[in-house]
Length: 498
Image (tube, rainbow, N blue to C red; front, top):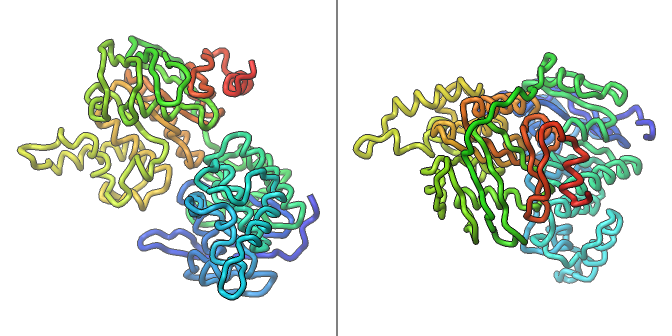
């Protein structure tokens, strides 16, 4: 890595930002230099995204100042940030799916003459940028036809087209396959070596260790500390994030019982063959595989969201005809989807209403909801899952990602189902909340529930699963017992390279 100049390209001094009752940032300082990759880390709600949005013109700080190349600057909006050379790629990508790649890259900045857009120049310039990034798809390709990883590259191409000197990325690998993640990290290293400043937010400690030259850690909206390249390791990062040494959740001994879920030759759309497996009481069955392997589609079909094209499902030894989620709930199934904001919780509603949502009929008398009972159940869940909120009347949208995920779990735990289908239960969740969620999942299993855990994080699969099924191209490629589990064995099955 080239030595960083002494003068930072961007510096935040004493940045503070408040949202209603939440002090998101309180006097935060940070420096960012050309030619380095900086990871900004912290628990959910630590202020990471807020700080980045202040630098990128999305938010205006309440106090403090931002310096660019040593001079104080005002960044009232994203246009001013772009003029300075600061580009921000959000976790939820900001692309127009119905437009082609070239149109997205130059959207709002289209080259042309006499009031007419020059589509040929757009195609040529976009193609050149894609070539620089090593992408083989055409500038004429519709964005909706691209994978999430390729859409991420379109965002990078857009930043390069603006001649960005500082590239900020919020959780850039959270939805990528391992191959796409490797490609992006290699690109980040190349852009750094060319003199760009790369700033990224991540909860994935292994990726930070692999790519970061420096780590800035925030805790509760304040500076917690920094780590240089030689100091970056798992324990040091965790200690700065949580303020103490974290005792990571370790898998306990398992005592399994009767078969609670039996899937026999289940066919879903696009699958070459049926899927069969059993899941027992007290068992945590991991389901691994690459993105697109069919894990989510299988879970959705079992829960009645997507149609089953053949095969059968038995719950507690009883043949169950599931054609809609209501049938699945009645049979004793619960499903926590991977996209908590769109499908798992209602952000505009308070915790109490979210917790009661799947179970509302149980709290009614003559059509009227027993509010005190709903509040009591929600308060019990808040305490049991350590949901950080002043009361159950707080809107879920005001909570951090980890606490939103706990609410999504609490909603189904109130039903006391036999089987939990958990799809990416810790996506976008910080290390402390992950450990807490793992403990909750194991507690549910010890209570007699059967858990199907879908995850793209191998570390998670290895840590919490009693047994693992690996999917490849919408079929089960193999099964691994607890004593067989390792990353290499899972990846061999996931890529069908045995």
